[in-house]
Length: 548
Figure 1 (spheres, rainbow, N blue to C red):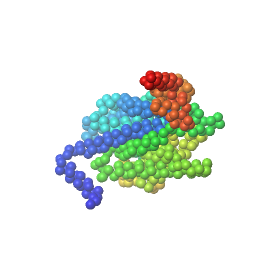
Figure 2 (figure 1 turned 180 degrees about the vertical axis):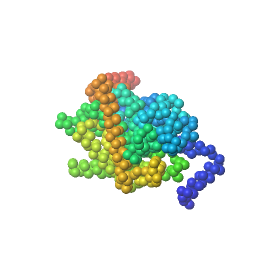
Figure 3 (figure 1 turned 90 degrees about the vertical axis):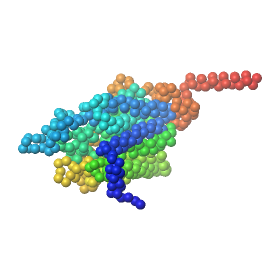
Figure 4 (figure 1 turned 90 degrees about the horizontal axis):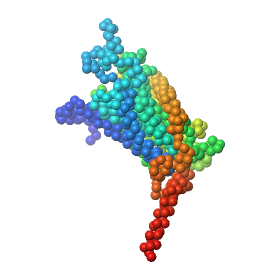
């Protein structure tokens, strides 16, 4: 017998009452849900490692995998030192907060600023721009530890994006430095703007946290970015653009006429394994961004999480299918052949996932199909423009997938956000009589959500480029950014990581030099060849002695 939602909720309430569970039970459930989601997001690092390893040539596989594992390591240290503080270092409520007024009183001269000071103590106008508490977790309440872990996994994910754009020619020292810069400073500031209740673009603001500014919600809505199209994907994508532009293309990526030369990755199986692992991890990334599975203000709050999971699936599926057919049509009309491209299909799924990440909690399922499908188109066009027009070499198409589709996802939220779903996530709009939040213009809204999204896109682009472009130029100037041509030609694995990732295959490793021929110098060094010959001679001598 099927049970409706009311019956299920009544059974849950009765079970809780019968067991005499404490009032903190919902908090523990929500914390556990968020932690489990964080574990899935952390597992996305394995997906990135496989995606990157398969997408580069065999001679650089070790290098890119090492960079991915260090994303988690350096990201953890950076988030511990300053990342969390800049992103979520917001004021805590004072001991007398419960006795503070909740509404202004003109007769007694009580303003929102007075209420803020009573509730949180003295705060400055810069609180809207950056957090300033809990450096190195100092004085951070243990009740926030679950959130610290979940947000750390997001920060590490954003920094991982860049490693794909600079693959096969970036120095290891440069990687460590830009990882720290992104997680310690660049990403946390954007996260604060959008996800902190004090951030100037945040849809979570209220009259108390916004008392230092002349408005509560930017453009009347704030930015609707549920799981990180701006804070994670745009930051990572824009930083990738700056890095790849300053670093320059790989040797041989363009011919003398400036036309792109194919440099396929060495293992499509690893690439698609990475896609599937990332897709799986996205079920922590998007649904986990709800931060809860139970709510006292929204009945059956799990419906929000369930809708996010479905929209995430739909966005990936439609993105994959759309990109596959778009690429096939392009090949057919340009070359006259039908090609069903596996790598393009995998990137299309990632494009759909990125596109749906921002609006996943605010749109109906039919809109998620459109958003994912259009995301696949955006990825395909952005990839062509990036390579053929801008001449930027991005081995994993990180710029097209994350920046291009991140921008589209924010715009899509401004178009398709549904009124009831927005209120389920953010609650009633402050300062209104009916409590209705702004919603997408295609759904009958006023366009304020789109306006806020456009400002967010502009600000994130300018902020990230303004910080990271000079940073990369300095690295290049001091010789810390790019490896030498000799090292790049030989491969980073042999040059810096103790040998090939495929030592038993030697020079026969397919894709070793990017053309499938597997030249020996990309699999075996001259010293290794001499040693192999000597070992073979010794073995032959022993066999001859034994037979004699």
